[in-house]
Amino acid sequence: MAKVLELQGVSFAYDRRLILEDLNLVVEEGDFLAVIGPNGGGKTTLLRLILGCLEPVRGSLSVFNLPPRKARHLIGYVPQFGEFNKDFPVSALEVVLMGRLLPDNLFPKYSAEDYAAAYDGMSAVGVRNLADYRFGELSGGQKQRTLIARALAAKPALLILDEPTSSVDSRVEQDIYELLTQLNKKVTIIMVSHDLGFVSSYINKVACLNRKMVVHNTGEISKEVISELYRSSVEMITHQCQL
Image (spheres, rainbow, N blue to C red):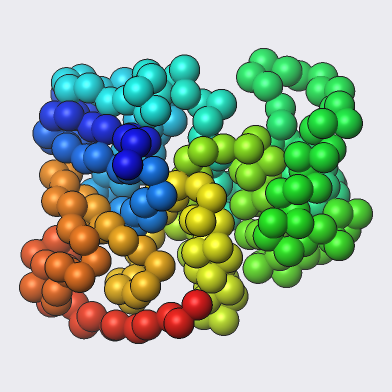
């Protein structure tokens, strides 16, 4: 399998305070990787490094064998739900079209190709019929699908999601996971999650991150592994999704 992401001895510090230490990770084409860990463990910092928003203080990081900044056009990013102003007066289609914006393009003029890519993204996540609806009027699940469509509109080879189910109920959460499973057939996925019930058929790797990182195949995850990661006793919730 081709390497999508590789970290070798990556460390990062804010004001000399070490946030991430000696991270090693390989993500291959077709992987579905979940990054889990406690608050303050460095998950968001890791995403910012992958996206090229931050630079490691030590080690090397490559995305598709390129420096992250040069690989941005190959990455689709879905931020945490709360980071998007859901009251902004735009349609669902206009939100998705934002995924086609080029850096520093303050006055976008969308082409027919941009609209086609936006509609393709909306069709892929089942919200094509909501194109003309105001984004703020959509349900939580519809909003999340629209934000995923926005990332897909860029035609990414790598999809990164930051806690995509943190603001939806359990029924919608399952729908989102089923959707990601289908998308994973065409795109590599990295997902940050707090969900300890992740042990299921759709994820094949788990990166346990709390300043340092340990990577497991899903079959290797146990209650003891999770308890060590969170430094406290936890209850594992195992579920199998027959998708």
